[in-house]
Length: 228
Ligand SMILES: Nc1ncnc2c1ncn2[C@@H]1O[C@H](COP(=O)(O)OP(=O)(O)OP(=O)(O)O)[C@@H](O)[C@H]1O
Ligand SMILES: [Mg+2]
View 1 (cartoon, rainbow, N blue to C red):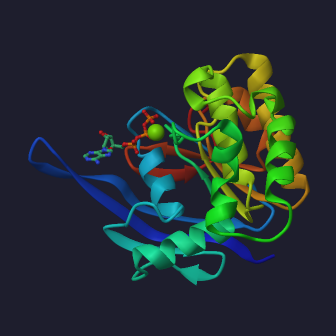
View 2 (cartoon, rainbow, N blue to C red; view 1 turned 180 degrees about the vertical axis):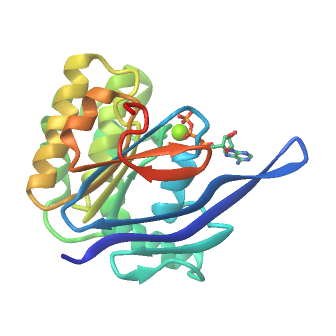
């Protein structure tokens, strides 16, 4: 099976208190098409930094990212946005909504920017329904609860039918039932062919993935290091 994502020897340096440190330390990972990969790890271990680079949002200090057969290194912002818009659904940890657009318009936005054909509004309404917030289509983001907004942002990440979903703690702070329904949806989407790479603090969520990795001080290892 071909690879949706290949990370090779990826590093990212930040400066903290004037001292450089490796937030992501020589990480290599291959996510095959159809995989459902979960990354767990303590706060500050580098998970969001890694996911940001995997989704082409953050440039690595060294190493390479290959997304659906395309090497990201050296691509300019326009090329990166186009590629992201067509193959990746990225849900950042603090996914922002555009406050002046309705929930429905927010969900439709990526498909308006990077059209893939079909009925955009119909697809957006279907996604809102799938995540249990169809009744909020015409609300403004400021009128939604944290969990409702999170689900709207998840719907937005899926509007372009991405081959790869990259989700950074999409269910943190949500109740057990809502978490389960979101993870069930991810599971269905995975069964329909979408590759999933997810960061989660919720050990419950591990049962949904086909493979689990642990992040500790910028280093990634296969398996659940917190169970050993
Ligand atoms: N822009 C930045 N500049 C400097 N340091 C940063 C920057 N972004 C992240 N860091 C640092 O890099 C380390 C890894 O951060 P990251 O956000 O990747 O952690 P995380 O594993 O996602 O944590 P959490 O579970 O709390 O979301 C942290 O020590 C953080 O302070
Ligand atoms: Mg994080």
